Length: 277
Image (cartoon, rainbow, N blue to C red; front, top):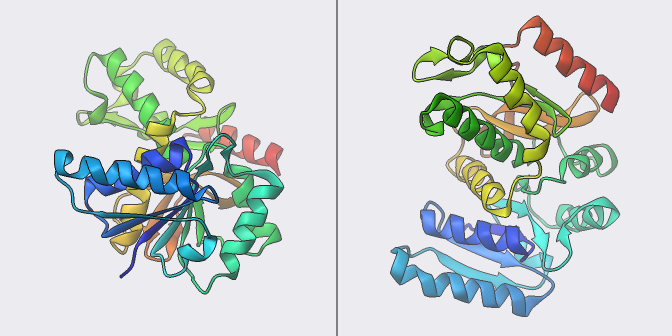
């Protein structure tokens, strides 16, 4: 039976396993970590909460990357006490995953995974459509919440998109943002927008709970065979990796979409990506 493999039993991996299990949109979640006892312990804790929270998703554990073979999607998370998989160690882990007999999309859930995505495509030749990062969606949610507070309304009703290279190189598409059916630029004054933009660096990196919520949405869209909704994700773009709106499919990234930007926003995005190349 297909399942979701989460590589890394740290705070992010554990939170994501719980989130996916509790939402009940996948049949099985498999938490994989070299520290097998940690993964088994967290899987057991999640299962013990199932009768209270009312879900029946299978939650299992493994201590070898081979346990990810056959997954519908593989999520790269973090290790207990070591943080997110990144750098040469993260690249080595991805190299092992590529050797598995699977073409499953790889979702990098961490805030520090942007450079790893770029290296995976350029050095390991992983197809750009197969690997993506979900952290920009978590940052987007934080900015939506703050915009909602500034409007004295719910952030749930706020829609906006964050592009580029957060934190310092994040570009907000304010012109296409909206809240309650009205453009954000008609409801927020220029100095309020500037104040929100200035706060973005302090919102990065998002917490494990926000990152896990973002990753869960991306995984569920992939497992469902795709979504008509656009998601902001880290993807290989212009010889680097950046946050861009994407359309998802069962294969991962079905299309990288061009956002509606003002001339100023487009110039800011081009400058950020040019500096990062």
